[in-house]
Length: 516
Image: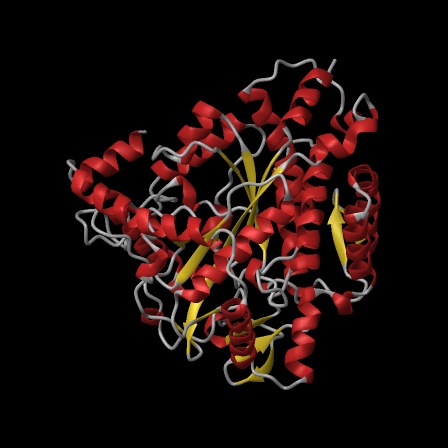
């Protein structure tokens, strides 16, 4: 009979928690807009940064101005953060007088057309990415797509996966490993509200993100509004969400059901998108009129990912190779940190991943998924409200008491992973302080700074961006500079090679991708 997952920690690895649990790898993906004179840049992706299509460290997300900085996975979390800082320095050296915008919400845009869709060259792969983004713009709007965040990619320690297999009397295989990752992912869904409370840093937005149904917003100036107790409006219905997406139900019960639901969504036409037009040629406004153009359009709190780097579609990679890591997508940019993320946050998120792994993880019913979404919505809009109640197992529970219970449950893992400096327990203790005192959360600190110092949102963003740029320009030469320069140059060569080698029509390329 299988052991329940929370029993694993009390078995034969209890005395060796630190050496086993700390071997998980962390990779970081950080989105940031290039901004000049308080406006999203309209210039091309800087050539000195290499090819956005082929550079594995510096690419673009939705917009031509929206950089995505990508670190390799590291066991040493400090090294991951140092690598991210090295990329920041390299970027700041090569974007002329532009700054990297420090907030998740972009500055005011006069028009959707002010936000350029990213371009990647003339290859089939480049056209695929560009037309896909045209589809996103037509479906959800460019402003929404320009919202930025941080994704943390986490892979479990191999020995821990082996130990779980032994405890559960399973063969160590990609299928069993995938099951373990899905167990962890379901629990991440359940506690995502805590991530929004602790790390939400977007209580303010510009008026172009409001709609007719937006209520209770207070005015900072003619272009900027806020909700008094909001934590992460980026993760609310006004941020990186969409009503049509919410209607899509993708099962987290198993990898097979997850794949089936995603594939089904990419093959099922959605009438609301037929007005955008069917794919006809390279000037088309979307790849297709289905619920999802491709697998990647499914924006969830967390997603299972494969490390396979082929051009095969995500669901095929998962089917053939299994899950290698989980991508957590609900962190806002921290405007008080030059990297948008600090080490303390990484340590807590690592603890939370492990907690979600070890805790019992039943399948998520439709009622529970509705409960999860309601909790996230409440916390994103009103998370710092005194005596706020959430719902756990259809019963009211105060945010504070639930958060403190989770932190207490995590404490055993933190103590086991602590070295001489007690870095994990210290991180956990600082999160506990934020639960007890909402005034020291990122969202309140940002709101308080804007309101008390009477700084405009855009002016503050510009000031922080300029300060960060000055710091990076004055920093000593980073140890990864040669690596980043080499990757930038070789990526341009790789892009040209792709363009020269293309032998298929784009329609053939698209068909091959859909059937891969």
